Amino acid sequence: MGSPLPSLQRFASLDSQSASSDVKAAVLAVIEDLRATVERTHDTAKSRKAIANLLDFLNGLQVGVHPGRSELAHSISQKILPLLYNQEPAKPIVVDNYQHLQAENMLVGYLSNQFAETLSFIQGQHPSHPGHGKGRRKEAVPPFCLFTPVYATGLRDLISQLLMARFRTQQIEKNIYEPMKRDYMGKGRNPESLFDDKQTYLDKTFCELFIWATEIEQTLNYRKGQNMPVPEDKNSNESQNYSKEESLVLELLDKLKLHSENNGYFLPRSAGFKLIGCLYQLDKKRFLKTFNELQNAVTHGEDHNYILRQVDGLANDMEPIDFDIIALSAYMIGEKKRCLSYGVLQDTCIGSSRSRAGMLEARPLISAELGRQPIHLAKNVLIAAENRMGNIKEFEDRLEDFHTNIKDISKLRFDQEINSCAGIFSCSTVTQPLAAWLGDGGGKEDEAFFRKQQAISAAKKLWATPSRN
View (cartoon, rainbow, N blue to C red):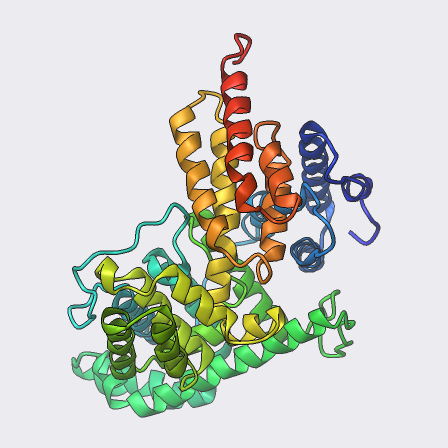
């Protein structure tokens, strides 16, 4: 995949004036070329790197409105990434003869259950959570990873592969696997009680593991952000010259992303090993204290500014991801009148920094959640517009969901996401008036009614055509 594909060159020549049929044809051509290239290559690691770089390029476009950017990125995630992991050439079945395999599986199960319980707690399913049994915010977009139980199954797959790669050492065997086999399994004792006896050692070891993976991930992200070449590694046999450790971290994150795509939940780029480490160390007592303080600010606050000051005070006293986890739970879970409002969540996010880059760093999860909402809502509108059965009520409802969001979102801080929505809408003649609305000033409210009516009229006209299949 070293030379540019002709279809990519044609795709790059598209602009906001391109016909929707041309956009779809260009996206389809790129996907077919990528599929053929992946199937021909014998170096899947190199293909993964090339696809990852292409996705980063598409997601990082900031100039103008490219009509096919979002659609191509989504199609690559849906149609090409699975080829790189699920359809590799068949390999001989290898029996894992690791002598401590049973003990390793029990450790995987123990750690996975901890994550599942923590996520269940954040989702308000535990009785100690203040929002338990009191409702959950209804949304028209796929769930954020923290608020779906399916995320825990993706983490279990990641943990299994991570421990297999990093924990088959003399130190782990001496401290965990051998004592489990000798002193627990061999004497009829519950092997899982070893984990309680070794809790301090396991906490230290797991934290070191997640810090190790986080540092590698951050190094890779920095190198990618600076457009730095991948350094040569004389000890690596892989053609793309990532070290063995870097390749492991990249593959685990890619597979977790693929899991989210296949299971319909949102996994932002900021939800990497840093988040995983924070989930493992989540202080539930502090979570409850902060959650209650957030609810009290909402319930007893005199006005929006008072609530915002209280929320900002709590945010400034915590690590960014730790606060984001609690704030998102307070936004999603509990009685509506006591939940954090969209406005407070956004103002807390924007007020965390004077720049977009600083905001993304200070509020990594909240900014990801706010930024993805209009894009996913725009996709819902496009899906309804392209529904051949022609459900005008569904189209109007999805259009209203999008309008409600775009009316409230910060046009300055989330301008890139608004541009992405314009690109999505440019893919259909029905939604092209919406693309014009967003492109001519970022969705001004005084134009909303007119542009929505144009789109609804275009939909009715399309669905009234007798030749429609």
